[in-house]
Length: 116
Image (cartoon, rainbow, N blue to C red; front, side, top):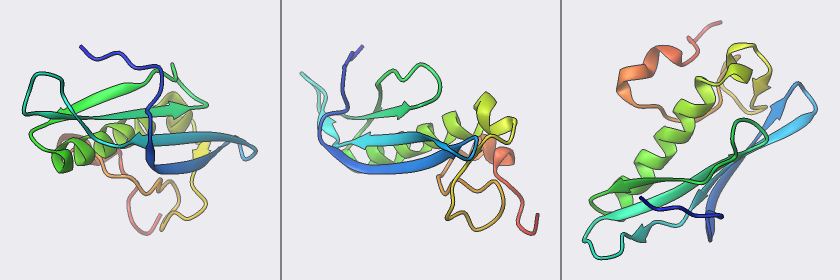
């Protein structure tokens, strides 16, 4: 298990509004090779809600690790208590409730419906 205190080099971030004023920030770090393996991992962190713990997602290559990391961040945010209570939003969302992040196929029902 990989334990990190920081995501390291940030390659992507998203700022969300919490309660209309405070910010919650999702950070994605640069994918790295898993020590002693051909696999890769991609660190991510959400600051402003939840545990703020740095999490790592593994993949067979840097692209898969990155895509899975983005989906994990999306899943964490869409399934958060703050989102479910309507307290979390992204100002650039296509529809109300859209955070602009992917989620795994098995939880697509958490995404906002078009036309709401």
